[in-house]
Amino acid sequence: MTLAATLRLALQALVRNKIRSLLTMLGIVIGVAAVIVTVAIGAGARASVQNSINSLGSNLIVVQPGSVTQSGARSGFGGASTLTPDDGLAIAKLPGVASVSPQVTIRTQVVAGENNWQTTVTGVAPTYTFIRSWPLAAGRFFGESDLAGSAKVAVLGATVVQQLFPDGQSPVGATIMVKGAPFTVIGTLAPLGQSGMGQDQDDTVIVPYTSAMERLTGLTTVNALLVSAANSSEIDAVQQSLTALLEQRHRITPSQPDDFQVRNLQSIAQAASQTGAVMEFLLAGVAAVSLIVGGIGIMNIMMVSVTERTREIGLRMAVGAHAKTILSQFLTESIALSTIGGLAGVCIGALATILVASIAHWPTTIPAQWVVASVLFASMVGIFFGYYPAQKASRLNPIDALRFE
Amino acid sequence: MSAVVEVRGLRKIYPLDGNEVIALAGIDVALAPGEFVAVMGPSGSGKSTFMQIVGLLDSPSAGTYRFEGNDVSTLHGDERADIRSRRLGFVFQSYNLLSRTSALENVELPMVYAGVPESRRRQIAVEKMELVGVAHLQKHNPNQMSGGQQQRVAIARSLVNDPGLILADEPTGALDTKSSADVMQILQRLNREQGITIMLVTHEPEVAAYARRVVTFRDGRIVSDAQNVDRAA
Ligand SMILES: Nc1ncnc2c1ncn2[C@@H]1O[C@H](COP(=O)(O)OP(=O)(O)OP(=O)(O)O)[C@@H](O)[C@H]1O
Ligand SMILES: [Mg+2]
Image 1 (spheres, rainbow over the protein chains, first blue to last red):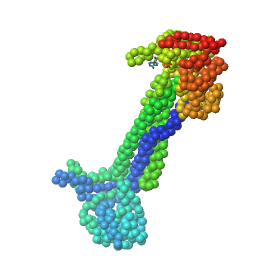
Image 2 (tube, each protein chain N blue to C red):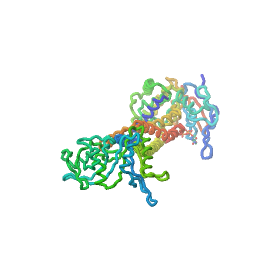
Image 3 (cartoon, rainbow over the protein chains, first blue to last red):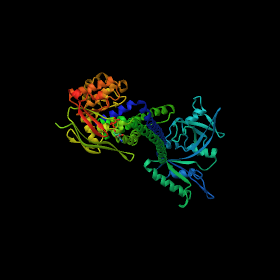
Image 4 (cartoon, chains in turn purple, orange):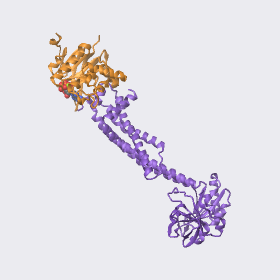
């Protein structure tokens, strides 16, 4: 018998039992739909993390305080307060470094007239807008003279503008109070949106780091040094030379751990996408389990079907069907069930994904390879779980089958 | 011309709970082309067993079986299936039509396995349904037909591959007198007009009366084999 004829027979048999066929497929449909939805959301999230990390500037290297050991107890990263603006100045002189900005952050309440807002005040150098490739929306950014004079000037992120100046007036020239000190707003930044970690990057007030250290933190150390490599091929070289420089400046002997840590955004991006991939595989694994459960459902129904159709099988054999033909008919039935179920699952999964994207505003992408893989997997489930019942059918003895009541 | 069926020393022994049931204890018989034979005998005398072996649905424990001149006693599954498909037609007591399947598709079924192209299938099926007077029931499913109609559809199905032999095990066993007579007249006509060899099992003398030869079984042996005088005359 030709493949087309076998397929016809199988489909006829399935159509004869519409409701049962639909119910049998349900497990596979749900499994595949679950795979598509989870993968679509996972991949979408991963793509958006990647995007926003790229938007931070891929040449960025971040130096943060490391752990310190005090009386034998090691603090976590950031426990050491050892990074100083002078470290930054020294790094700026290294070859391959385009620019450096210290970064001081504190969370505090800022007040403008009757409005107030809890936000992050970030103290940086004038190079910051270049390093972050962050354009201004209005006014100006502070310069070297503001830095040298610890000027009480501030540049506002878009969220802070919204919260403190809700009536839409330009805040440039206005005065805001930060920890009791008046700062003059000299500019506003263009909105950047969420960071890869889901933080609102526009929820910040940016001031000269000198002002932040003198007037807000009172410390001589900074939270981070942002270093921009001149080009991406030099990131590793710069990372090595600045590590060596800082070890020397901080008098760290080879036997001691560094009191700082250096990360570049590419490695952060990689880590993030790896985490995403692990999540995706876990979710896909859960979905695969549900596919297997669906497969067991198919096997169950096929077994019932073989028993129920014993006389039919006997008759088909009596009128000339080969054992192999019976085997392929039943196998085709279960493969058709699982494959049609798989295709339906893809459609339902895609619809659900579109729904999630439009209702929850999550970024989603449906990767084509997962669509293909899940339908193939569904078909394989059909083969695997359909084989035993099909073989059972093909091994029936036509006389016994015809006598069966 | 060689015999359609020729069996020599045919035995069939079923193992049952460690014992042996001797269903056929040595059968010698031959069927010439164009014969119409009724097999009779008490329940358990081996009639169905004999029909199954002749129909190549089962193989004998001992003895030889030549079908249309070829020794078929030792053929295996698919080879037997091919002969069933091309040369044998079956009619069962319980019709054995596929449920939820139209009469036309039921009649076409043997041709599906014989690899007859689709357009020819339809044509032949309609032809045979006309021959047994059920052409108007093409679209009916088995549960929309009377027993007699179902059995006639089953006869049409047995005819589609132009068999050399039709085997019918109690074809009228589930039918009333009127339908029985209809079915038997059809079989008789097929035998007379188309020259098809027919062997049927029955318990009813009225049914056996349609045949030209009556073979009687008892305890797995043939105890009488006679021409049907009143009909042959
Ligand atoms: N599969 C089997 N296993 C064991 N014994 C069997 C089997 N099939 C038939 N027999 C036995 O073989 C003998 C002949 O059975 P068979 O079915 O041929 O009788 P029959 O003449 O057709 O009877 P009936 O008129 O009741 O249909 C019986 O004793 C029966 O019990
Ligand atoms: Mg019987």
